Amino acid sequence: MYELKWNSDHPGHVVFLLDLSGSMELNNKINYVIDAVQDSIENLLTHCRNDKGLPAERVSVSVYGYNYRIVELWKNYSVKQMAIAMIEAEDAGKKIFDSNGNAKPEFQTCMKMAFEEAKRDVELWIKSQRGRSDMPSPIVINVTDGYPYEGENYNEDQVYADTLKAAQELMKVTTPDGNVRLLNIHHDPSTNDPTLTFPYSRPQIDKNMQFLFQASSLLTEKMAVAANKMGFPEAREGSRAMISNANKPSIVTQFLNWGSSQGVKPEADAY
Image (cartoon, rainbow, N blue to C red; front, side):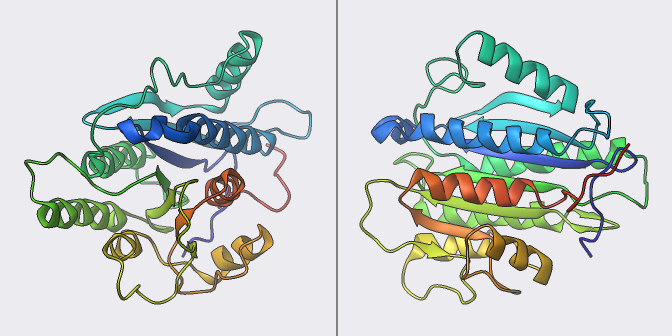
């Protein structure tokens, strides 16, 4: 399980889910999340070149924002499309996503819709692989500054339950290489609460942490070792792929770089 590494014969697929609720405007959270995602994509692209330095189609990426609706930022972008988007943003002196435009924070945190959209996305990607046995399992990374919230007219417990069900349905989507891996990071630069990193046991008190724990995939031994190398010594086999109360932008960047590079070969292939 989770043995296949990406190459041009069996490319991988990564989905980023970005919380675009109104609270993301506070403390410049939206911009440092965009920076972290951009850094992760740049990191991915460095592993998508052949021995001649030319782009190699080893991974595709989708990016969706969510608040009261789903915002399609990138859908199944190829390596070539990602590289062009990065160059165009750099030439224009802009970020790849615009916090005042297509990635503007507003309103609620309808996370259930995001997990449902990710499920549709990965199922379409799996279908596009035409039943190949050498298909790496997709990776979904959810970045949020809060927890499910659909408005004061909705029952909070029901919203949590429905959102958790959507996350679990996403994690049930399977490939010959294993189920979809769902990774979650909750960040809040203003919090003084302790950061919970790759927990092994279900939190006993905090309802929000319990939700995130149950909505995150289990780490395999190899995933844990990779997390250790990325600066997360707490990670071990059987831990949950989640962080709660991350209060530094660098933690978000580390987590995204770790999560999005799960399919990268230690040494890139030459095709």
